[in-house]
Amino acid sequence: MRLLLLSDIHSNLEALEACLAAAPAHDVVVNLGDIVGYGASPNEVTERSRGLGKLFVRGNHDKAATGLMDISDFNPVAGLAALWTRDKLKSENLEWLRALPHGPMQIDDLPNVQFVHGSPVDEDEYVVTLQDALEPLLVSTVPVTFFGHTHLQGGFSTNHSSTDDYRPVYKTVGQNETRDFPLKEGVRYLINPGSVGQPRDGDWRAAFALFDSDARLVTFCRTPYNLKGAQDRIVAANLPQRLATRLAAGR
Ligand code: ZN
Image (cartoon, rainbow, N blue to C red; front, side, top):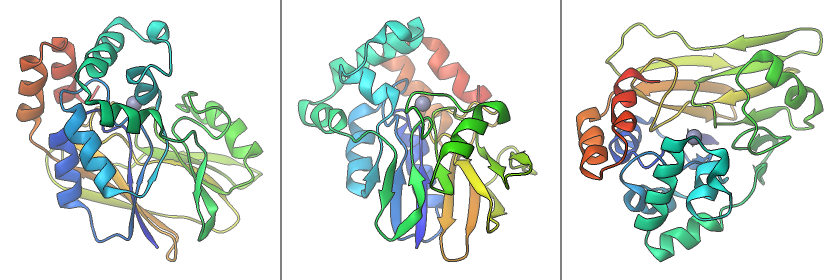
């Protein structure tokens, strides 16, 4: 089975459309959460994501925008964007987002793979460093976990005697590019496809990944998108300017 892994789209329609146009052939779309928040196209992105199916986990921004989580934990810019999103969402989209499931989620035919937003231990936990990855890698009974939340493309692994981390290195800053990451037998993995709509690894291009479960191959992808279009919408919506400028920096 070939899975298209999308995470942290954050209401960025231009980035989502670019990923879908660049994505290689796939059988199933898996969405790791934070469909909304920060960007200016919450309804369009919710409807597009919903249409793609088939498996979803909720993100903290999906919870905040739909009133499932107190925004007092958010920084002021994120809190403002969550309130703006709540105000703009059509009621049917808000209800759909509110009903998204808590991870980990699994696909029937793939018992060795699970999907979460933050971590298999806690859906709101950030797995940024190898140290952060140790507990989820060691306690999880499922060998391969796909996660989001940090907006950092890459992964962590352990073979029970040593642990490792991986970040794809690309040649350009503006082209469509891919990096293959073959999974080994007997190794546990935590893998983040990166953020579609608000990358934070210094690369402005939209990030996503493909997983071929038969070949045990993850392919990390970056694709340029209509950055100016996404920024203009944020400015026109009177969302904080910083949400537009950070997209260009990939931070
Ligand atoms: Zn996010």
